[in-house]
Length: 527
Image (cartoon, rainbow, N blue to C red):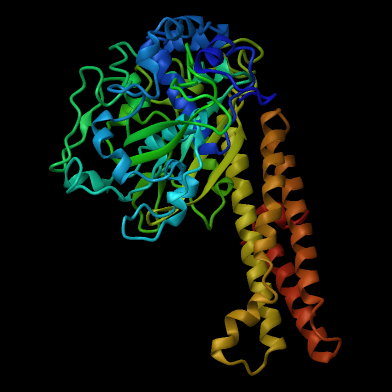
């Protein structure tokens, strides 16, 4: 789970946090879920800053996370046992009497493999008994707690814990973009994302049946419970899950988590699971540290969300807007979110700080899950550079880059229409869309525009002049778009109508780019 793809226990990750570049699971969502759990452990162990000033010192001075590793290593093995008979780690032992009869194959743990949760759908693949290694099952369980889509569980409420256990609530992060501040090491990443807390960390959710937190029942739908602190938030049990222990073929049977100190037998695995509704939380604005808000088509404001049809980089300017609009360090009020704390790092020309930024290499990693109703479709993610003191400049670059790309796409659409009008003089209405699509290369433009956009941000973050960067970016996009359009027009016949259609499309594209409505960077030297 590092740059060298080395498997480590949770204790090992915290012990070596400043020597490891990052954690890296099979999907962006699984990696975020693991980071959430590591943050929860830091809070539970008391390894967190109490104030914004202390947080900044922790990041700048590389405060050690050894206390969190020591705390975890000293925990009793039984309290961190994935297969404990009454307090299984991260699970609900109340499901035990029903597991053998009502459970499914371990594929149901994996968000990308489960498909629609609906108990009335045909899910033969979920009955496959091939065991899942315990370490993989543990990480899949964490991902379920954080990102699982809504739906109706395949578990029987009448025959198990109650009717509302079938009502799967949407995961805490599954309906919005989660933004993680990435440092140059795992340790720096954890420190950057540890929210200052002066009121205590709250209770760590080690198991549904452990601790003093009053859990919900499943006879009626409860109201969301208040969060007791950040340890509670980051270890939230978003699903009621129970896993049955097994052993991989050719290994000895046994139990043990493989997730922390005192892992048990060799190659423990899971061969059957039961998944039902989990806890409901009542979240407040201060607990939404990384949320970026955006406007919907109806003019409403909601947390920025993942979309299958719109690449996230097109909205990356929203991240920089959150930093740009943050309060400056001389504001005495307590900061509220991640972006306000990041804005406190002095830039190279900041009168509040030294000549060069004390913190380097920070990036903003945005992760979201695209789901169609109750089925997970794909993960979307993007990494965007952040430089202390350059929030406003990066916002200008990303906003301008997005507007330029949008305008080029619109111009390509109009060029495709111009070619169609001449190439198909007497079209059937039902054929129009398919005929225009023959010349519409906007999809190629969007695929090719992401790399130049990322280069635009990297150059801006490194201190280059944003105007020059935007000019180069616009030139690249316009040149690529013209090439895509020309290739799509090559399919036209070599006759009078074909030549007229080519010329009309090229003229329309060029006139759109030269228009006074176009972004200045596309209009050329005479803009």
